[in-house]
Image (cartoon, rainbow, N blue to C red; front, side, top):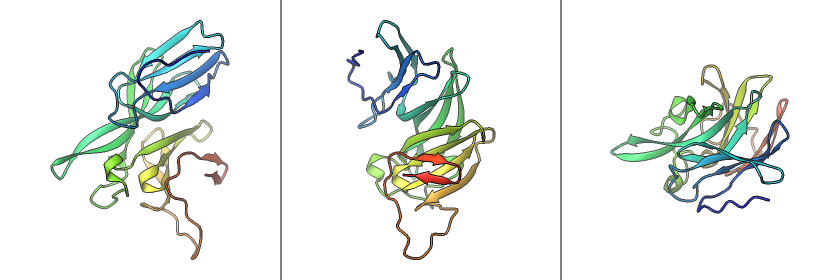
Length: 192
């Protein structure tokens, strides 16, 4: 076993893509994000521990087919004279280099689309998935009660499903989801 002994939260643990152990995020999401957050890979017997520094790492990450990672990372911008906490998706190469793929502000405007729990962040993205066949990310945003499909190559939002900025019209009387924390996309269905 492996004990995460730092004062960081572990929100996601996944099987390593190569089958050699587990990968998890060590981050501070409950309060202020940590500059010391990491994606950590641990062998099954706990003898090998590798870590990639990902400052301001948030709730979730995915391993990409080439063994690199994509993660939700907190980003602050000024909005009406105060810092506004949004997110971005960054890809982390095996050598630790990062590339920003998407930002909350790419598809949403806080003067139009305001989340419902600003004390914890504007969008509060908390779930990430990647579809290699379509080359798209799916990002769940708790404070928008929405899931967005993002084109990995362009960063464009293909569609939004949910309460904020939805691309879809719900049938009258339909049940809606609220503050989702995880989902699974399968074809044209989403399990929340």
